[in-house]
Image 1 (cartoon, each protein chain N blue to C red):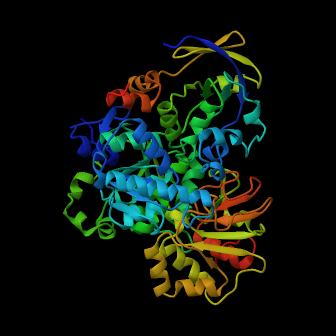
Image 2: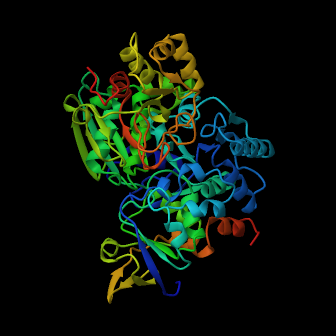
Image 3: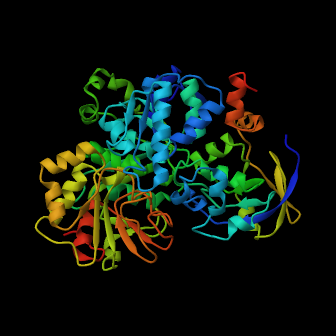
Length: 417
Length: 164
């Protein structure tokens, strides 16, 4: 028997199988299920249509309101009511009504741990791979079924290994790593596959940075993106995770990878995804001078403390360019509070930023900075699809918080100094 | 095995994402029927009104990439589309389509061979015939066929729970 990749190990631990191979269809038991506000009415409706009378394990389900928080239209409130009613009827205890973006909370509040298997009604559920969890997005019908049955079929994915070696140059971030990878392999470069990140450069990344990378892996079509869990992962998770046996969560030296992609971190540079494809990635220096109307720093991709802090370091004591709108959205209440305590919010607002409440609003095109025909935005979130942040002619560039802050000062796309 | 059927094709390109299939703006509308007129609106606002029941949507690679929104396959089904034919599919869209009983067919060459308005003949599980040429279809896993033949995951769960 040959060795196993990290995703294979996690699936084997979950199912008790002594061996699994890519392509095999297996049934897993989830450790955590995440449902968000925008789909909860549909989950509730399908759950009852299917004829379930109870949730298999209500304590493994987490309901999070984030896409519609705070409500922008009267109709949005219907989702909160439907969620509240579902939680009450079926005994869900883990309900977050205004604590932040789902993917941030699932990690921050310790619902997922190294080795967990988690499913969520959002495509960016891949984020929890940052702590070494197998997590991926599913639709609301499937969520309804798994809430009732406690099991879900998955095809064991083959694994693409990404080796990041060495240290990133100053001003180059995890966002540049994942954008570069997506640009290299394409928006379908990892469809049905697991991405496994390793190498000294990956080990050196903070958990927040790993979350940025795992979050965007789905933009290359990946089923999941995993970092080998280490002390940093345990520190970030619930302390109870300390009892986990990390030895069972190490890829074998003779694991079989479909492909290995290597990056020398010191050769990477700031890049951006250009409108309107996530894989249309170019060096920021080639885009410098492009006029922008708005800059957005936030989202489940780049709304963490290190992101806000990096932006504040550039904006401190300066003013955003005339006529430019800078919107900043921390990923959670906890991050918002920490940013306030550390003076980061003051730096940002002094520079002219509008700091919004934690939530998905602008990234998913619902509220908090929607844009008009022909406008240009440079944003730190994960998608630049046509129409994503307002009118379908809005041009969306995706880049790091560092590039975003430099651009906000210049009023045109700018390479950070 | 489903019987063969014929349909007229609408040809879209590579990477047709779920925000194109149904923009987030319309996701909070109360029903899929109310969302259906906005299908594909960022790319081709007139398309939803032109699609007739039994028509076929042809995409390139990575059809349905993007968000987990299940309204995407539901809306395609609500428009009466007989099946989607593409070079490849994004995984969440694929599962969502199966769970809603929307037939997805895969062939690497056909999407480049057809022109909008052409008629093709589909024999599910076997091939698609276009201009006298047969394009073989990729096989489907047994558990996927099982959900499809039950008419989707809701029907299959109803059966499990003794309701159908």
